[in-house]
Length: 96
Image 1 (cartoon, rainbow, N blue to C red):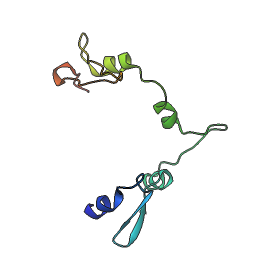
Image 2 (cartoon, rainbow, N blue to C red; image 1 turned 135 degrees about the horizontal axis):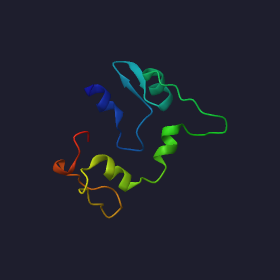
Image 3 (cartoon, rainbow, N blue to C red; image 1 turned 30 degrees about the vertical axis):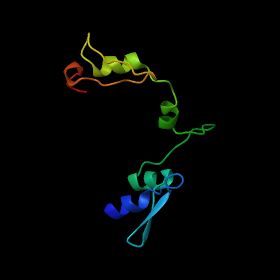
């Protein structure tokens, strides 16, 4: 693991799509990870992104998240960018 992380990041440019560990190339692109995890990406006709990628591009409904994670009547404060700030443990549901 140490060798993997040591070789993974470079100071110049974006993270690589593969890394060499003990003489073997380990690919870390989307297709390789999905193959390893046995989770093939299936696109319907006319789609360019998988369902999760499309979901990630939707704006988050903060109140829906608050209802799912917080005890009724409790919540969390949004930061300047409109993202959820800290959720206190005492304000969280058991499931959260």
